Length: 186
Image (cartoon, rainbow, N blue to C red; front, side, top):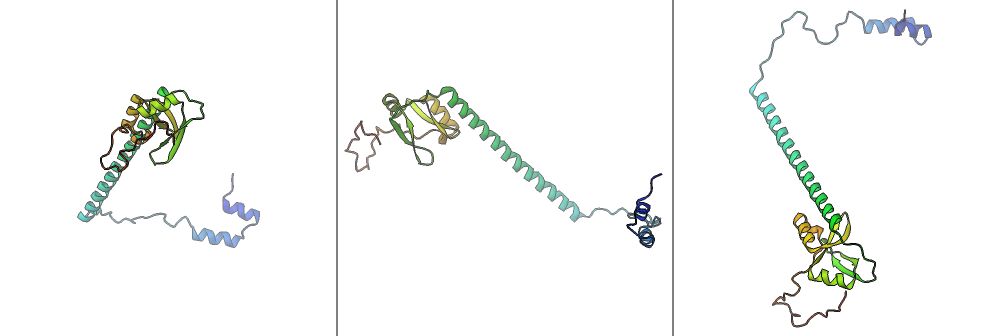
């Protein structure tokens, strides 16, 4: 038969008999555990109106917070879906990369100047708007103009700003009488 913990500690010499008796008296079997009503009838308390109002307010606050979290999750999921569509459009329609010393400079959505290697023919098509520059996962690729328009519908920042209205002249522009040379590359 296995010994109780108290008996094992006594045998090992870790406690004295006096300490074991003191511990037994402190945690005796006759001491009730938990709450007992000792034969008294249990009286159920009716919930008061303030407690009910507080509980209802807490429930409504939790429901509002849950709705807000759900809306944020849906927005995040929709954003991920749009970025996945953009990535798919770019990957399916991007033009093959060009190895050239000629670079085309453009500004991104943060107005930072970026550059991409192009041939003179591609440069002319970019300026005409027949080819667009799309950003997907931090990389810029050349895509056909129609695809660039589809990407712009999903996220305007995913397509580099290309001035298709370059031929229109602003009436208040002090340099409107000066034409930019065609061979100017910046």
